[in-house]
Image (cartoon, rainbow, N blue to C red; front, side, top):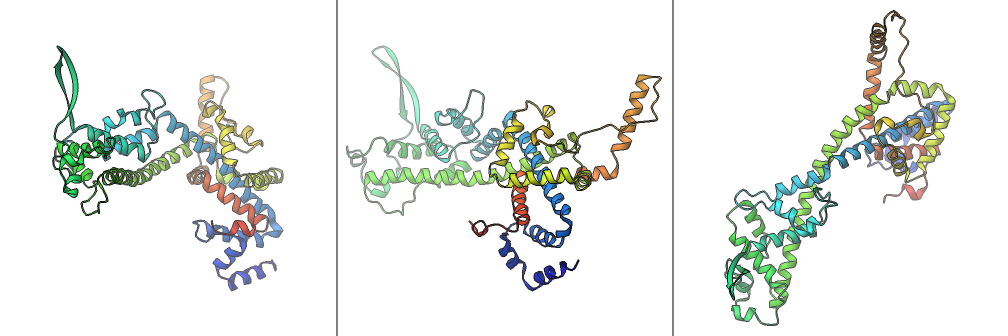
Length: 417
């Protein structure tokens, strides 16, 4: 009891940031207060170490099942192609234009995007900004041409011609104030000029819409100084790509927020399934681990080893991933220790043996009366909320607690990166 007094005096004489800096805790993190409390708590319970070992063991158990939740969630993402569907929805929103063609559909048919599919019918889960900008520029540029058929020696010949002249209302030529004849000298790169000018001509051929206005805003303004015909046109194309890529990346940041919000909801429901499936009762686990010194010591040692392995989450995911279904997963075998989890029907003395159906029904009723109590529901709810925080959160917290248990971390780890 007297050992608590120096600790409290030390805490009162030093501000929390100073204490945190001494033990290597980043005060900017959202759980820094928890770690500070645990550090002071550790100093006050030296004579009662089972309490700290119980905390460490519970964090380790939650981490293990958080990895399981992430594996199940990732399985749903893969099976139902959630990433690809979310990306497709986002691109539909970006290119939504009810006055012109369905450019989102055409974009997915473009070779640059189509080649990203693993197989026909799949949706790419990732599209780079470069691929998006190049494909979109091609689609708009193609709007400047139309296909006609002419007779050549009695045969029908397919030929693409411009809907409007490349040099009609050309921004490049207007800036340069030169004639079309000068612009078509052999000095100009033929692979660059058609793309830039056909894109502008393609925009002109579109009906007025919000998408058209947006794409027109990506063209290079006339106020930019010109160094030469070829350099100016090449710079136009480069600037156009950069503007579209910037627009794409900015929109994808919003999509990432949407996706994370959707994933958090999915993780919460998966956490409910895992908690009830394995009967993960936070209150029961706490009592059992605290009472069993052998189990507590083994879990604390395993937690210590896990904190020293940066690839622990990946290794656990690989172990869990070897199972074909959630029902086949034996978490005790995965962890390598027998945990107080799972469902065990309590004996029911009220059931009679005269009738099998009556006995089964009575046992089921007895089971629900014994298990679904207010205390158990509270224990399950606490575990669901804990699992919802995610495996990275608990692994980071585990490392911090292990560092506190081992009397602080090294100075190199305490420095902000």
